[in-house]
Length: 563
Image (cartoon, helix red, strand yellow):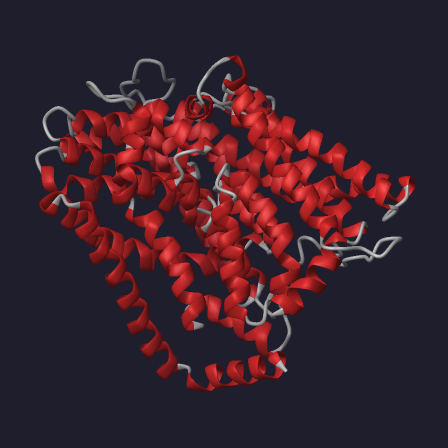
């Protein structure tokens, strides 16, 4: 789309938004207000208008900052009943405004964690660790398939927390994938696909802790329900199957094919002009001969210390079991503590190694912070938008009423729950928030004592849908983190990932139709995996035939690279 047509489409979208706001203001004026809310639109479909505005404008304009701001402004207008001064106060100063979200202790911890990791990554670049790992990987990792599978395996191994996963895997694997001409969009997709989906399948993770805290049934704990839903969590499992299959088949389609063609044939890892982390990938050798240990040792220390930080906040050193400590941990505080100690260790490591002097190492502090400004700004707007939608406009009430109306379709309800969860998570940008809204409802709709298997399938549908929507949403914090970890322009990551995610959604939907009738997890899972691989084989046959010339050029480029 040309710049002129994009501008026209953006202006048209703004006009439509203004008309919608006028319609909402006129039709809801004087309406009944739910208890605990300030506006008659609370608990109605219009509670989802702010995220719809933000996502729609972002996809049209390819510009995320103004889109998120306008989404927040729309939410503030609705909460304040279109009163100008109250709108400004709501947007900035209310509990769910910008100041309230940025000042929240949990959010502050995540922002500090981001900055710590940004400084560590810059320090490892200046100390030569990234360059050394790139040299080793160029010899040890012989193919594009191996580079992608290595990225996936590393993402699976770092299952503790999705934020931690995205940034750590990105910093380690950027030089490896770059040497094999894998586009930044593809790297961001693999990182994102092994972040939230892996955390939702891991019994020991911050996500397991969150979900198990939301649900409890008669005679069974929240963590037991979480463990039971894992084999039925089709979206998360099939996302991992898809990543591995795409790498093995050397398959790409949709917008991703353009990015991969440009990376392999033209040597352009980015495709578009935007370079959100310009200069951050100029890996340096350090003052002494660097080695792979200059990257691996700090990363391993970071992982260990973050795990210790998480279980410490959960009371492990006060007598709690390891699993209970994870179930009760404060992920924000734990990651913040672990990353801060790891950063101090990394400084000392490079000084003792003689890889970098004191003055140059201190340059990493502002440089690492600067690298994280873009994701921090996006996160602040995204958190505000999500809080306005949930706390200010009662989107959870709307979803609860929607599910109550569909309760008669018992065996088809897991599919309905999956799709609703995906839509809500996509619109609000939060899988934890979506799970918090829907998981307790699912346990009530599918009572465990009446049908334990159906209860577990319903919970799995909530968890799978929440991750699905979070995975696709441009305002999701994990999507933002994956872009930051890969040093990829955020909307390039979003536009290339959605077709892949929708493919998994289609296959997962079949599973949630089938599971309530079969109720044997290994049979359903085997069918789903076979269907996923079969779908990708069909797509490969169709895409290869349609783009034979492009695939031939890419094959030639890969052959030349391997030499």
